[in-house]
Image (tube, rainbow over the protein chains, first blue to last red):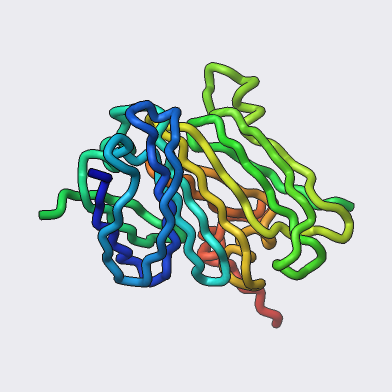
Length: 110
Length: 138
């Protein structure tokens, strides 16, 4: 079964999301990306990867606010790092917005 | 004369900075980029690293004097973090932060790279609250 997570955009701005999928277990390898958009205050479940590629290697976010385009990207390079745990040990990812930054947090849903 | 900015890396990690230069005065046009690598600093054990974590960088030319955006990336806690902020509209917060000041300072809060702008030559804003004796004529 592929990976599946609940993504929630709690910010007041539309956000374009790109999930970077890990190929098997080593963060150096990538198995493509999945793109979707979330409207302000929208939540949605998204599937990514496949039976073998069940981990995320990173996430890229793009939003527009206050006359600027803001892009952020967080990519795992070491397994067991804080970001790796955030992305791969919980099934819900939230985006909020503070002081010109998109802030990522994760929790276990259900 | 080409414009300059002083960049200060206070993130604690080596930082890659890309300055995105505006072509003329409209933010939809870009006149190339300038890449700068700033070592982690300040590290007071290594004076050379301290000095290199502060760099005055020349970008653009006599016509292209504005910045359109910044790309910042560093490696920390087993992950790479990067941020890109690009101006879409003039006179907004980011445009002002990039183009009304001569110094940009970078910090890292553990999750995000943040930056603040200031002018080296002007005193901090708080100084203005000090009482100034008024001169009265007569």
